[in-house]
Image (cartoon, rainbow, N blue to C red; front, side, top):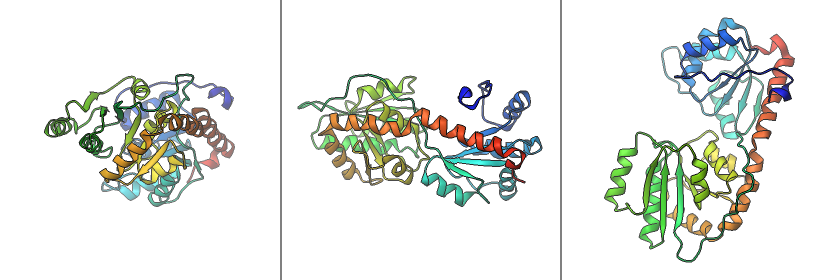
Length: 314
């Protein structure tokens, strides 16, 4: 990335919580020419917008989801943040619309979809054999946003139809105990496995047939992109961010949020042509390659550098 920009780049991983103090210390140490904020933790950005206002360097902001409108100084903080945004990156049309509603005024805005490294080699995924168990996979935080309980309900419905099925839940979160209780109550001990946190989710993706992502809302999530790169077809909730991702690919099915019967039907349909959909998944991943994301992001940096001091909003 540094070579493409024609600059020397140093990288430091600042450990700990994304609070204003450690971020401010890192900025004072490295004195960057551009501050690129990735709004995973909007509260850190709010706090730092106060601390960094005198710094006089332009900010590039990647906005995945709208920040929560809370706190007694919301409007003042939003105005201060706006003063240092030289450019904004959104990950899709859904996040662009949310950003337009959220911010007082938008700086020059570019759509740069998230990207992942494309998998090399590997055996293509074959069709499901007669009587073979359909291996479903959920990867994500065990929180209401991701709705792992719904994934369990889909697996239970498939089991109740007499279909051989297994579901692996990879991740941790506040719903773990509730999930364990639900699995026990439904008698799903031989169907659902709570794997916990995994340092190698790509291995889980390589062993699965379908990824379930029944999220209630998203920005542009990385897990489905990683699954596509691994040749894993997707069942996604029909929400704006997932529509940005789908693009009409046969490897991706958008299914009505909360409709168990619809998800069961979609899973059965996709299971009937796994080899074809797996090949389509790899093709779809090329639209979200890491190289494409890096080059597009560098283009935003170049535009801010060319703008010079005028790129900082006042």
